[in-house]
Length: 201
Length: 201
Image 1 (cartoon, each protein chain N blue to C red):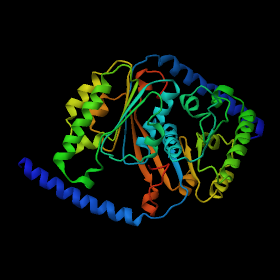
Image 2: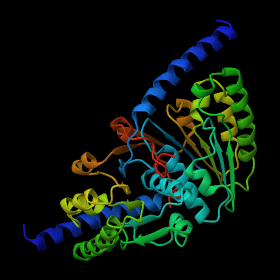
Image 3: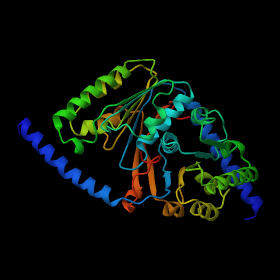
Image 4: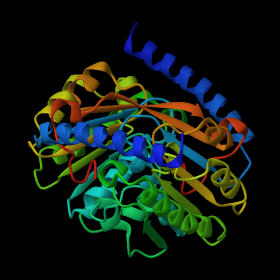
């Protein structure tokens, strides 16, 4: 095949592709507040939520963040976003539960955190709510899934919500508009490399 | 089982879990510049890269971004990050190839883009380089994979690189330290919802 043939075939392929994409764009014409769930064991769930946050801020949208379980205040994302215009930032945990090892206390912390999340989920001025690492509070029974689903479902019509964390419950993914499962194909951690500022925290 | 039993079992489980995590943290003690690849068909690859960018900026690191193929300048991420301190931002495409349908032009555009990426991959003052949607330039043969791998491998020892895009080539994932494959479990697009500012763009 000559270079010209290649180029002709490429053009024909791209013309067909463009037609398919154009038709799909034509059809996808609804707008609504989305519920996105980022789950799975791979790296990239929380960082994806924070990338969407950057996008939303780029459009001048107001964003509320509730970080569950991660009870630390020295992450790069917090240092970067907290205090910026249009950002409301809450760290609601007291460290991973295997550091506290106190079920009663973790439950109370999670429930106090959910009250803050609820308030954001009722506020139409907040256009994106990020519930980072929420799934662990459900897994360990600190929060009631039925209540969470009801509060998310009852939010303002144009508000987007992003939930991150491993092992998202089926009822949550059923309610969601978009679900990505992030598979851990390879992780530097297993090669003995420690968590890197700017990448992992 | 009483509530006290539950609590005791929970504590015991968390103590064991903490021991496992502590041992793993102890063992993961190397530091190096990481190559991360975010691939797969699901939503969240580019946004994850931009979340890591926010983390890196939170640590005062300098970040260079090269967006391949996406030849548009109205994304939320660009509006948000471009012009911020410590950010170098390049949009290197001229729109998806099915919009241009000109193989020669796309190849030239991609190669001019790679020259800019090369410059960042040789600059030790840039601590994180994001090569967004790079994989498409490889898939369509616009760029040479061998050259890309050589340039990434030769980068400064502490520089992190994040590559995003569907269908990452095996040789790239072999070179990578961390690989996440983002599976498309569900996408709002298929329910007729159009791409949402702040989420998809």
